[in-house]
Image 1: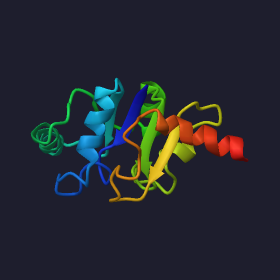
Image 2: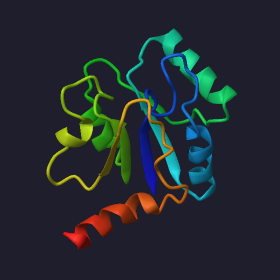
Image 3: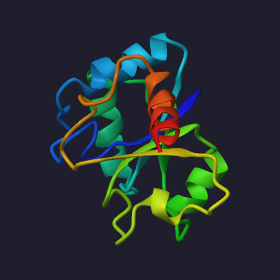
Length: 141
């Protein structure tokens, strides 16, 4: 399973400080075999360096931080990365609609939209639960 998470307002606040237990939860998912990757609106060299330094100092792997280059859209980036699950806030991409809402109708990406600043605390430590919740909701409908 590949999980793609927007870094801002979910993992780190505007001062690059971790929000709640986000770092612990991500590391728990990684230990369970999840390929966790990140998206960021930041694109300046110094901004990205500060973000990577914050990730490293807080125990997060920085190997897969995807920053938007030029006029590439976040929708295109998500389509190229092909995550199983996308975790974002309503305004993660800086647009009126979330990336999830702008993905094509045939997209297989499971989307989780969190409140800005809420962190990952409401999500289960078991990454499989990220997929099961959708199935439960569909079977109850």
